[in-house]
Length: 257
Image (cartoon, rainbow, N blue to C red):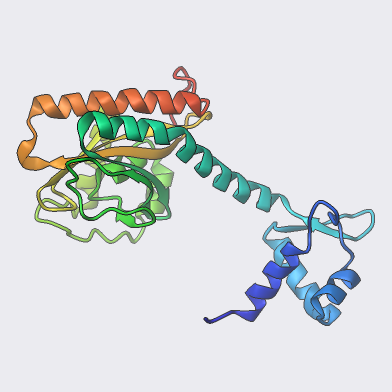
């Protein structure tokens, strides 16, 4: 396994801090790391520049920075999301017999963080930890639809609209038009845009700030779907989404972000 020495050393420095040693002098860090003081100083300055380390101006000692708190909260929020959502994913899957997914946005892609297999499983593509393009998936559209123009520009800059099936949207203008429709309707749908023969319907999930932090979807055989069944699926998903969002602290009167 390839280990990048400088990265490994920086992470080892972060590991030195705990509830017993919240602030450490550079000479002690140098001794614990068995590295020259000048090398440690360079590593600390880099970590300090990125916000992962702070220096106490009163005593010169180093301590963990707020950036770690920010990143840690993202992990905690994700774990809370899975815990809260699980019972609703199971309930939806049992009620419908279909596979239900929980997906978050990671960079320019969605990533499956949970999945409950239905008794009549239809989708082959998904597995926990796998990534999915945002332009051709219902979950991707649901995750993107409530983003600001600036956020959309950041995600879609140099985005590769790979054609997965003949139904895949491959044009940015058409994709943005689709997102407007998703925002207006409150749900997203991909009709065999990511996997032939499979239609997926998704809804967003909000956190306590009114921000969309995840999407929940249900996958079904396209041949078995009609408009009435689509509407029933949308209603089930929306009902579960509201319950999950409320458990995560979302007030439905908050403006959506």
